[in-house]
Image (cartoon, rainbow, N blue to C red; front, side, top):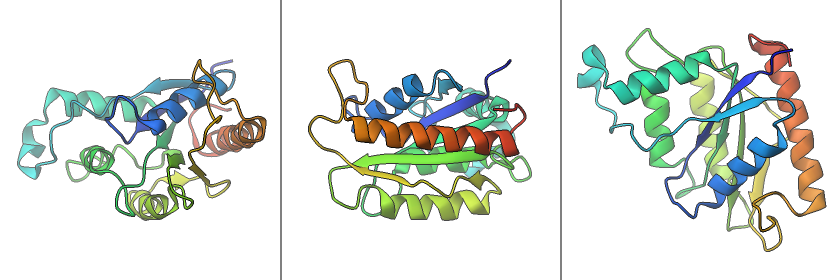
Length: 187
């Protein structure tokens, strides 16, 4: 049976990103359910509507990856109570040119780590509003707005904390069912 193909978008370009670590840990944790592929954002130019008539190659590649995916997993930080600029830029490119919205009808899930007690809740609320406008089906629960703490990851980058691991496994189970409801491939 084919595993659903999931596009992983990490909303941070930092080499030491805790959200990159979370995304990679989720990729490994979900490998039995999904084929999760990293969808790099670093090579996307800043959004410019003037390029709609001749999309840059990196934008065409990105849109093709999104369109080929059965679901979207977004793992992102909270920057100034909102989404990161690199993630918003990618979302804008995926919705363009007008009439060619690559996000339409895609099932999605959101996760994030932050240093503060609120985790990424403010950013995720903004992100849910944006994705709803683009006709995406965002998993409502559980919300993965985690606070970074010592012992969350082991030396290999996997989730070391058993409570967090069970929670994230439940999140991935719910996402698999969500993708099965809305996606092209049954989960």
